[in-house]
Amino acid sequence: MHNSHIVLIVADDAAFPRDLLARWQTERMVPAFTVMSTELFQGGASGTFDLAVVGPVRHGRLSSILKSMEAGSRPVLCVMETAAQIHAARTEHPRLLLMQQHESWLDSLILIASECLKRVDLAARTRKAEQAAALQAREAALGRYMLENRHGFNNLLTSVLGNAELLLGERKYLAESARDQIDTIHRTALTMLEIMQRFSSIAVEMQVTEKQSQSETPELSHSTTVH
Image (tube, rainbow, N blue to C red; front, side, top):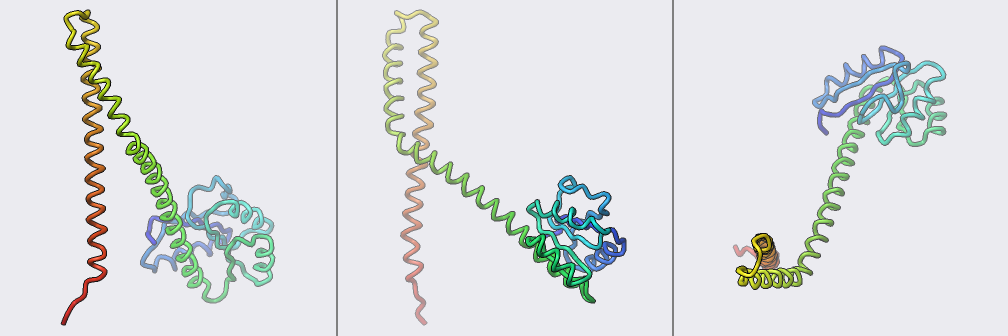
């Protein structure tokens, strides 16, 4: 967990965020905080946060606040005063994290919140890994296509080069504009051929490296130390 997280605290009791922030400041990793009352809370427009903590709010406002937060993807931890309130909220909002405001509630809340933020980090890393894997899969598919078609592409380039060179051999019979166009075709085809030759060279180098890696792995796995 890192200290770049943002924790949203929604409460109408000023003592709740004051006590929570004071307790959180004693931790080694302290996130940034956004504190607001239910009057300022705008649901989805409340800004970006990694974890929401809901404390005591005015009568009749809790349900709408929780419904708005429940629609998001971030964890929501709601602190309530009685077990009856928790039972009612759990029935209506099964996805939310609920805890009772007992004697050591601050310590319990910090512990639960820290675990929630760790899961937020894990989810973010998982998404990045999935995106990287998808990108690698696309690049691998493109690479396979180029490998499968490089011989045919090289044959086409060779044909273009050969015809361009034949035409250039008869340049004295061609108009100046035609000679310039054929020269351009010839130079472009040479450049493309160099690119494809480099591509083929890289493919061979990768195959050699892969074979060396495969041959070294069994040797390492079967190596023993004699005392």
